[in-house]
Length: 151
Picture (cartoon, rainbow, N blue to C red):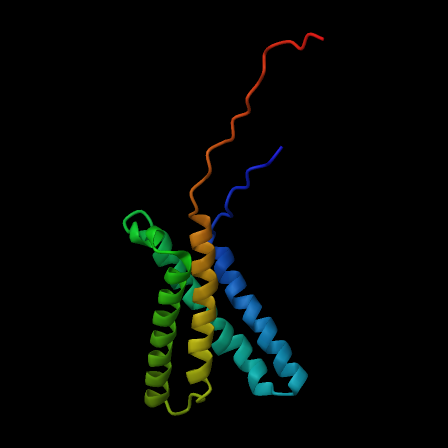
């Protein structure tokens, strides 16, 4: 007997939470292990913060537009993820560049932190959103044999 698995539900608050916690832990542990206090600080601010913000923005846009934009479901998942990721990383780099030009006290590392965090958050959020949109398979019908076995 095979059991039909339903796709996971997409919950924006979970995406935002994991988008903050995962990079904060990974980069924070890396900073502690290598003795880079600036990486520990960045892990909790520019890296995890950017990741969570991007996950919320991308996830909310996808949720809001899913019924009006059927092309989101027609494009192969990898194409959708790649397109959104390139756009998010480019926008994050533009924002980081503008911020470092406008406020010279900001560390130059945000020009690396922002696009990488945005790309990773977009990949994960878009992939998971698209998985949750998978068409639900029809229930499997079992054939029953109402004849009695006469031996």
